[in-house]
Structures are given as C-alpha cells and as structure tokens.
Length: 509
Image (cartoon, rainbow, N blue to C red; front, side, top):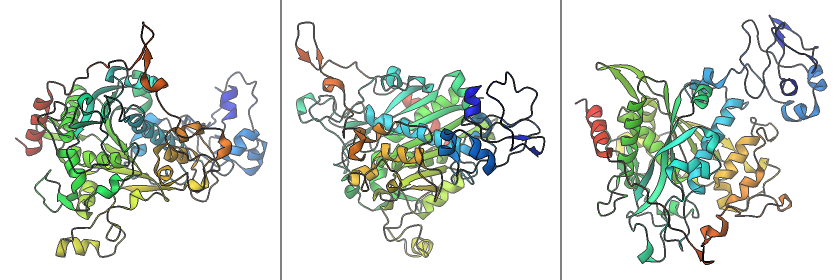
C-alpha cells in the first residue's frame, strides 16, 4: 500500500475532484472509494472516474521524491498496456504520446531498444577470435546469458548475411584466415517470440520481434554507401527504390557458405511465416527494431513483410485481420526514396525513429534532396532524380546536451551515435522544454559500455563491456584456452518451404 501511495498522481471521484485529500498510508483498503490512482504501472481507472491534473496544493504536499520526478509532467488517464497496446505500437502515429512522453511508450521503446542492444552485446567482433563475426551464445539461452531471461521471449532463429558485398567497414572478419568460422557470413540478428504467458497478458498480445545488428566499432560504413537507388523489386513498381547497399545486404546470398545459402530476406520472411502460422488465431503483433545500419534493415524488412502480405490473416480467401507492423528505429539513416516512404504509409507500416539531433547518420543519404525539400516529388516523378531520399514515420528527436550526466560532445561522434546513449536520453526525456529527469532509473553506467560519453566524475570507465578474460577459460590441466563453442544450426530445414509459401501467397497463387 505504501508503494501505491508513493506513486500517486491523480485523485478523482465520480466527477468530483478531491485534490485536498491524501489517503493515509495506514488505510487497510480502498474498496469503498472510487478513486483513480495513476501510477507508473498504469492502473486501470474505475468505471466512474475522470482524470484531472493534480493541483499545486496537493503537489506541494506530496513526498519530495515524487515532486522531483513529476512536478512539471502533464498526466492523463493511462490504462494497462494490454488495453492500449495498439496506440503504443503506433496505430495513431503516436499522436499525443510523445510530448509529454507517455509512461508506457517510454518503457516499451527502451525495452525494444535493449533487444536491439542485445545484438551488440552478444556479437563476437574480436578479430583475434576464430569465431569473429558470430553470436557468442546459443539461441536457447540467448536472453538468459545477457541477463534478460525475465523478458518472456524465446529466440526462434538467428539471421545471417553474406559479407561478400561492398560494405567493407561493416563486417567483422578474423585476422587468421585458417580459423575463420565462415569467410562469407556475419551474424546479423535474431527473430524472437513472446512465450511467457504472464508477459503475453501484460502486453495484450503475442509479440514477434525481429532485431537487426548495426555496426559495433565503426561509423565508416556510412561512407561506403553508394548513394545510388535500386528498385526494391518486391512488387511490380520499379519507382519504389531503396539504397543499393541496403538492398544488396538484405538480398544477397552465397551458396558456397552454409550460413549464406539463404539471403537475410529469405530467412526473415520464412521465419515470420512459420511463426505466424504456428500461432494462427491468436492476437499477434510484429515489432522490428535496430540501430544504425540495423535500423535501415529494420525498416526495409518491415516494408518487405507488409509488401509480401505476411501480416494479412485470411479465411477462405477473405482478409479478416491485419497483424500490426511497428518499427522502433534508433539512429537510422534514410533507406529509400519518396515513393518508398509513400508505399510504407499505404501498407500501414508504423515507424518511430529515435534520433539524437547531434548524430550525423540520420541525415544521410539524401543530404540535399530529402523529405524536407519542397519539390522532391516533382524531381522523382519528372526526371527520376537518382539521389532523392525520404525518412519514413514519426521522429522523436533527443538532445544529448540536455543530460547532466553526459559530456557536451558525448565523447566523440561515436558517442552521439551510440545506442546506449539513445536509451539513456529516452529515460530522461519528458517532452520539449521539460527538464531531463530519469524516469525508470536505468543505470547510467550502461552508457559507457562501448563509448566514452559519461562525464569524468561518474566513476564509470569507458568501453567497459567485455567478456571475462575475453572468453578464455582455465582447463583442468591449468592451461588457459578459448573453449570450443557448440555448433549452431545455420537454417531450419523448413526454410525453403516457408519462403516458397510466402511468394505464392504474395502472388495470389
């Protein structure tokens, strides 16, 4: 009861505002009152309750720890996530949820950002390791090894892409060629599905997540982009175009490598088809997330999923439902042209782009001709201008200079682009022109996992995230060795079947 009292926000009773009343902590029950208690978990309001902003008099009487967090925040009635999840997933383009920042939305975006961060934390990018370019963990204990075992999700498959494309600064390769696990592939992310019944009830549906890895150590990959648009080729409209490097990464394969016999596109579409059919009849959502180049792949794959009608549920040939597709993108570049953006909008793909205004990646490609240019549509339609790009979705612009914990330059350009920095900024963002205050009390030490963005007085060393002893273990005879990792299945045996079904369904055959 004390915890309920300490998180009190709003008190109303059958259209009468009781802003002079604070219940005693010693109350045994609140059953006789029709009060609306709005706490950080978002309690469902009573039948007759209405919402109101707490008056200054009541606010001043609240405990200091509440006033410090919430005295300038606007609050409105917030139900349980299971009741409002379509809005949190963007069905209304997050209207009214970003300023002030909705409590549920902040937690959910951070949660999905952490699932994208898991791609970095589990990736072996050590060029001295014979496993460089792989995931360090098995799918079965992936989240548990990362301290995320309580998330309620299970990995259903890993995603790979061939490295034999013109993005040399993106892929990680071992220095010793003789010990390379694969000369042609890199681990790119994973597909997971909510399996914990309590988590499914909390969310109000069974969620399918696709998380894409971005760059671990380099930003130079952005200079590898050819800035040339390529027809998407996912439907009969050559005017829909995407950046050629992203297209190549998503669609290329290498038959000589067992991890690249299917393209990243074929892998993700086949897996989404398998999962959606396994849980057919349930309330589902598809959430795609990624950071940096992973954000580009997140948007591209979400568009592809919708274009291939993988989110369409039919009964005897009649569409009865569309599974919502949402992209939570972090520090992502532009992916395609204006026609690509318009098609994503037509398909109902919802995109929330979280950016740091000091980060350079979200402004490329298309520095000069983009969605802000008045005559972009004319240039594309009249002269097929080849360097025209447009962002998709809604932007949530953050500013790392607003955080009292971060250096003014976030350490360097990499710090401004860092995913953990973005998650920290999300935690402290309450709306434009509002003070930066950490809402979920997310540990600020996480910021410096792979950068040097925290101020020196934080006491947190930079670049501190690494495996103990770099993965070396002491054997029974006292020698230090790098243990062999269990073999990971490249692709489920039914991948080809499910992908064939995807193509047949999309073509209506």
